[in-house]
Every structure is written in C-alpha cells, then in structure tokens.
Image (tube, rainbow, N blue to C red; front, side, top):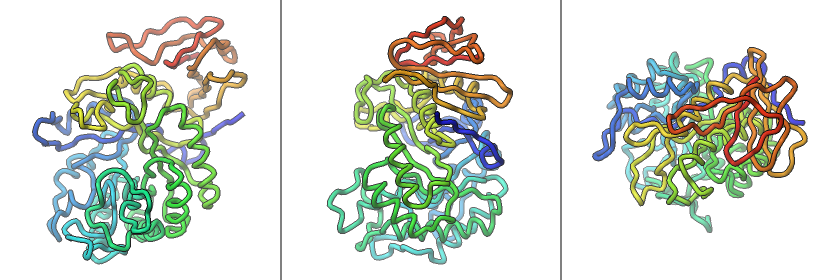
Length: 425
C-alpha cells in the first residue's frame, strides 16, 4: 500500500492546492475586468493556499521593464505586496523564456546566456519582492523551444518563439540559463524556493529528450521543485505520472518535490480537444476532485487548477470553459467543488489508496492534522463504507442547483459513479 506522509518543515510550509490565471488589471476590449479587491476576495473565498500566473500583476519581464530601465511596478505592487494567498511568480516569460530582453528584435539579437540586462532584471525584481515572494518559477513550458530547433522533425504546437534563434535553444542551454538565474535569486532571497519551468505535458520528447538535457545543463541544485502540466483525461494521469517518476529517477531528480502546476478540464461540451467525457459543468466539478486527489495520491506535493475564471466563450478559443468562474464572474459548479476540496482535504497529513478495490474503482483515505479522516470514492459498482473509523456523512462533490452540497448518512455499501463521493467521520 502506498502511503504518502507530509511531515517536516518543507512539506508543512508547501502549498497544497492553488489556482492559475488571475486576470489582474485586465483591460482587453470585450472582456470583463474585475478589480484587484474583487479578485482577491474570490481567491481567498476558495480556501486555496496559493496562486500562480497573476497575469499583468506577475513579474514577467515585458510587464515590469518593457524598455531598457523603464520600470513599472505599479500593477505587481498592487497584488504582490498584499497577496490573498501565497503567490508563485513567473520570471522572464510565460513561454519561450530566455535571457533576451523584451525590447530586442530579430533572431540576431537572441541571447542564450545571461547578459547585463537580464542580470539587472532578475536582481531588481528579486530585491524588490523578496519579502513578499517565496516561490520563483523561472520561465514556463520551456520545452516549447523545440519549435526553434533546426533539427526537429516535429514542431511544437502553437505560436513560434518571438526571436527564433537560427541555432535553436537547446534543453541543456535552457538548464544552464535557469541555474544562472537561480544563483541570482538565492543571492538576494535566502529562503527562496525555485521551481523549474513547468513541463508542458509528459510526452516522450519531454521525458526522454528535454528533461535529461535540461537537468544536465541546470544541475541538481539549481531548482527545488519539479513542475509539470497535464490536461488529458484524468484517467490517463496516473500512467503518465509513473512515466515522469521513472524519468526523474533516471535524471537523478527523484528526491525533488513534484508539483502539478497546471491541470484542469473544460465545462464546454463542444470543446473536445483535451477531454470528452463528454464535457459539462458537472464533469468539470468532478474533475476538481478526480484530478487533484489522483495527483496527491501519486505523491504530488501541490496541484494548481487552471484556471480561475473562464476566458472568452468564442468558438476559436481552445481554452474556453476552464475556469471556476464564468467570464461574467458568476460561479460554476467547479467553484463549489474547489471550496469543498480545499475546506475538507487541504490540511491532510497523509493520504493512502483504499485497499481491496476492483478495477474501475478509485478510493483514497485522508488523515487530517486534527486527527479526523476523510475519504473520496468514485468509479463503478459498489464498495464497503469505511469502518476504521466509521464514516458518518457523505456528499456528492457536484453541488445541487443551489450551489450547495447535501450531506447524508453513510450506508453500509456505497454505489459509485463517475462523480466522486466525499465522506467524513
């Protein structure tokens, strides 16, 4: 039986569950804009303990120094100086991070190593925010640089990098870049926790080519946390996570904490690119538990739901419907599921899979710091209710039409479905 214990200072201090993509200072035409206070109140009300990708309040280079020595910290200050939960900031860029200044133009100006402008950028932001930020992520989804590799037979999806260096930007070069940035961060923030750039999925390229090359260039001490992303069906997550563990062990990184820094699913039935359960508001609410609990069960220290609020509901938008809130600010069933998960499970000290389940049945037992217990079950068929200790109440993780969860007594046997049950003693 697997048993994940969360003991020790590092584990106790680590975030457990967070959300991504808060649209602070959002002003695109046709999109709803929420105030900083409104977003902060909604984030705090979720019960999560961390947030990542604060958009225009984050510390990506172009947002704080769009031109050389032209600094603007007003947006970041408004959020990071009094964040409602632990912020995880992103340095350089959300994709295609490099030491190249945002004002550089063309492939000829691309920089693969830290120059004076990049050193100044990192030094300035870390010294300014060291007292307010503990978690620093250097870049994000840097494996997309495969798109600039002149020898790549298959290009990464999505837009091309802004500079697209003629010789590419190899995983080993990316690793050295992250190590150089980490050295500056640690020089000015003694308790910094550094995240490697989150891996965009767990494809064979990422696990067999990018990760070994990146870790070779970075070295084992450059970062403290391994990050990865997963948006496929929740049922495929366990298999791919096992492949990640093998790759980390092979790279000598098996002792690093692992965070699932991006996962989620859509409520839009007509968006079938990543999941098709079929998708619905109910399947999304169920996924809040199925994805996060499964990741914790595989040993992930923290899990971040992507995203906080829906992006615009436009047919060409491949990320519509992923939010806990609709784009008009109203809450979806997934919002209530997240509040339930954070309120009941965030403080667990151990998690273990339920023994004796049949194929297609999923169950986990949680022990909380106050000595109480919770259980989560889903799947097919029926299972015996917990008796050591006895479970006394149960509720579906999908709320009713009123947005609330109806608790009831626990029968001797539970009838399972694709929607998880949460049980408490």
